[in-house]
Amino acid sequence: MQVFSMKTRLCLRHIITSLLLVLALPVSAGVNVESVRIWPAPDHTRLVLDVGDSVDHNIFSLTGPARLVIDLKNTRLKADFGALDLSGSPVRRIRSAPRNGNDLRVVLDLKSDIKPRSFQLEPNQQYGHRLVVDLIDEGAKNAREEAKPTVTDSANGKRDIVVVIDAGHGGEDPGAIGPRGTREKDVVLNMARRLADLIEEKPGYTARLTRTGDYYIDLRSRTILARKHNADLFVSVHADAFRTPQPRGASVFALSQRGATSETARWLAKTENRSDLIGGAGGVSLDGRDDTLAGVLLDLSMTASINSSLGVGSSILNELGGVAKLHKTGVEQAAFAVLKSPDIPSILVEAGFISNPTEEKNLSSAAYQRKLSHAVFRGIDEYFRKTPPPGTLLAWQKRNGDSKISQYRIQRGDTLSGVARRTQTTVSELMRYNGLNNDRVMVGQTIRIPAS
Image 1 (cartoon, rainbow, N blue to C red):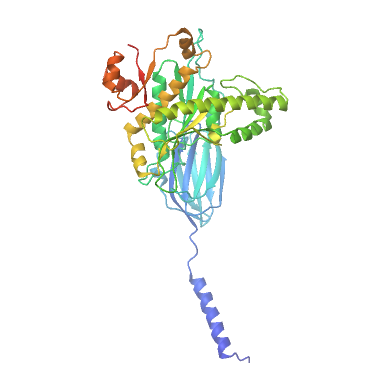
Image 2: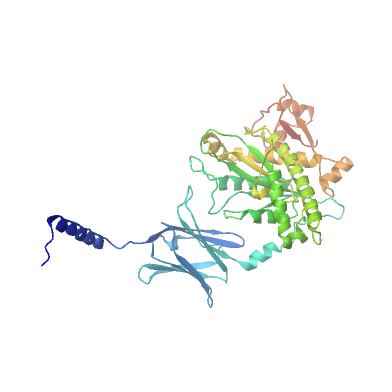
């Protein structure tokens, strides 16, 4: 009979106790689906499951009737699918049930066949781990991609100037979030809509939005939409943020030369894009060109676009300075992906720092959004009246001296009532025409004078 020492017996007792404790622990409950959201868009719908951690999953489609099955391993449902508003989506209803003991099966009953895609997102400042399922309507997507460009031509060479306005972020991507919870995606969509309304109201202009609701569009698709509409200008609206609350002020960005160089290389590498690369204002095709000539054409186009972007950006920045504090006095340049259109002048307007408490309050105000939108439009209009694209109504007006607009830069000692008397108009008309909420004006501010 083997005899153990006291020390050995104590060690064995400790090991056995530890094993018993481990065996007594409950089996891990796995991952919970804690909440769910749905984001319908014109050509796809995004279903987002908030999960406690990354999750092993599988998706597959069924027909007769159309369904999408989502299997999640070692997962329990804590969310209520019945509370989702499915209107505007291809989903009729969502069912779920436990499967294989610890797994979860979610079934989407669909109105029509879709192309599914799934991926997982890491936590950000608003959400934790997420499983994203995109339901892509191939018919709507193809129709959107094949849609005819915006019709602005006229028989007498007086086409509209087309401005495509891009509200940044959207859907599952909230953008920057202010101290009080104001979301960038909401602020910039409101501003984009206001700016589009101002542009549409002005003879000689047509406005198009990249997104009209709360859904996400990838960055490349935003510039593709601008090309589809034959845009003369692309304006992306954002609200900046910083890790501390002190920075404030509006900014305007154009593409940097470094960004242009990388974009040239990207387009040259994608030979399938050459036939319609320069399809916006330039109308030049790279189809059939060798790499050397294509590179020269691209460089020329990019340089011209950047120069135009800097010009219109400077005009907008000047107008913004009359209604808001500026973060920088000049147009900045950076390699933003959304600005990398070789043939369309493109700018990014940072309306202010949403991370600054004062500016967050301002940016969430409809009156302040209106002031900024009016300033951006005045800058756009000022630039295009000086350098209108050929074949446009504004070019015809400039050529024939038929411009219906005059502008006046406020001098020291000027009052709005004094300007109104000299220009044979009224204070209320000047306020309405320039989107002013009161009769105060600042030295250096440019105001538009309606035709008498």
